[in-house]
Image (tube, rainbow, N blue to C red; front, side, top):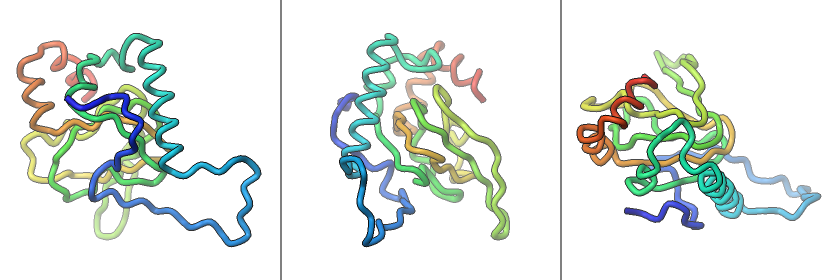
Length: 168
């Protein structure tokens, strides 16, 4: 498995598009300035500490999911996946808010907002493409698990099946 509480920042995916405006030349932070990587590491550490303190993942997810995937921090307005992309991952949300959008002819419609303990990407098992776009509303932390690994575990673990079906 991968290290779950690694302090190294990992991008959400190679296709993650982060919309970030550069700081204006006059920008003078009033508090010590942290780079995105430092902020991401701090968010991961806070969530990892909460998982240890609470004795498990939010939403009664089994803690072995940390070993199946990797824990990652996301910037605000980062895309987890886009409508039309090939479904590669299932995401277990640990902190932050994530919005699902549907695009139709250049118009975007917000489908819903997700947060702690919810799963994204699970509806696309066996599908050729994601049917919506998911992006972060604010900085968050999640577990990203390769779809094939997640669904292999899904087939063999009745508790995981029950948890997924409750959330769909």
